[in-house]
Image (cartoon, rainbow, N blue to C red; front, top):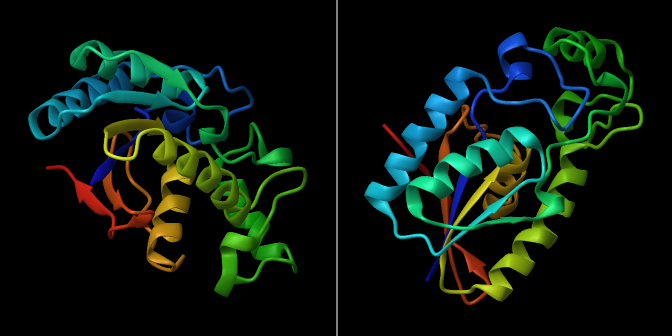
Length: 195
């Protein structure tokens, strides 16, 4: 059985400021680096990963570098594991999103994952993109334990894909870990790993 050990990146400057980032090059904070060291220790204690795959965004790459150094792994970058593109909301505070969806007649609270900001992606768009990337990774390494460092939107979308349900999908905290086991093209239910 293969294992996808999915890790959200450590706290970034955008997370600390509660603002959607303008650039994929926003770095980790000091707290984010500490979180990455703790995640690396948890992974080393519980798993024996053969590979580490990362989103191309700097906050994920920096998290990956810390984890890779602790585990003695090389880093492979997979472009389609990047965070949700928020389009016109880049640079805005998290609160702006909450206000915008309240006023947008296109936003359906019963199916919020389908809402797409101007020039951006819906969570459903993210799910479709990420599933293709994950399926390709699983095809190349069907029996390996693989650390995948990405983003909250990526992990939320994978949770929804695996469970078949957006409602109740888990959004992990920074450096939160979710385990998704798989075999013969099928996923087991995701499990939250942590303290």
